[in-house]
Length: 316
Ligand SMILES: NC(=O)c1ccc[n+]([C@@H]2O[C@H](COP(=O)([O-])OP(=O)(O)OC[C@H]3O[C@@H](n4cnc5c(N)ncnc54)[C@H](OP(=O)(O)O)[C@@H]3O)[C@@H](O)[C@H]2O)c1
Image (cartoon, helix red, strand yellow):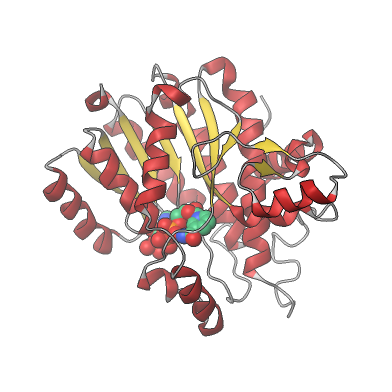
């Protein structure tokens, strides 16, 4: 029964997160919008309640780039709710063209928001997820990870603590690319770690959804122009909200875990090492292959270790 489901969505005030909050609320779930700007998000919360006629749409403040905010959020959530069925890590930092920025915990902001924060939040909510009889976690990744079809690519963790913060070559785009690959690796590792608890963990590869005016304004002018052109070809956020729902709520994905799923709701497969030309074309033009880099367990461990070290969560 959807009415028994408790669904937590980060960054639910805008874009795909907002469309997803509408979708889950319309389907009768209890929805918790985890957003950093309460003033702006209250209007969205009211709009969702009014339109869907579902009063069980809650709003709790969360800045997912800040450990303190995550801890406060999780305590409040656990006080208010008995369990958690669906956790969607949708919020992301992608302010293309911006300079290097550090989070409140002195971690590069793209990684703090897109990878480390979601990791900490999941770990703090595991006990509540365990109380669900069908717990599912979904990470929003991106087709930007296709860069990793280049076998020379490797996640660079040497500049996550401000080591080269004044480097003129710094690019949010590259950090975003790496943070989204790190999220895929974290998905695979977490799926294994949480399997015995019955918690499923998957990621969705988003190819591009129409961005709002507010999102476009976060980019520098040159990046904004590129994004405006891309927007002409992108489907509305609603398309991916439907995917979120399908992956997190339907029987089709009830036992699926440790997978990357595309926008056609197909489970993606890793590519082969040393692909021939035909395969290389398929990698870039198709939508069901992901880089072999994501299959390498050493890479899983690298992400797992830096998430643990940076959040100071110790191994069991
Ligand atoms: N749209 C695309 O073309 C595309 C392509 C590939 C992947 N994706 C992924 O899809 C997801 C949704 O993207 P979208 O296009 O819907 O973007 P969006 O409309 O810009 O939404 C991003 C959301 O994240 C929130 N957020 C950012 N930093 C946060 C923080 N520190 N704490 C809490 N919330 C924070 C934003 O809140 P504020 O409103 O307060 O800024 C906003 O609600 C993201 O993970 C993105 O990386 C999108």
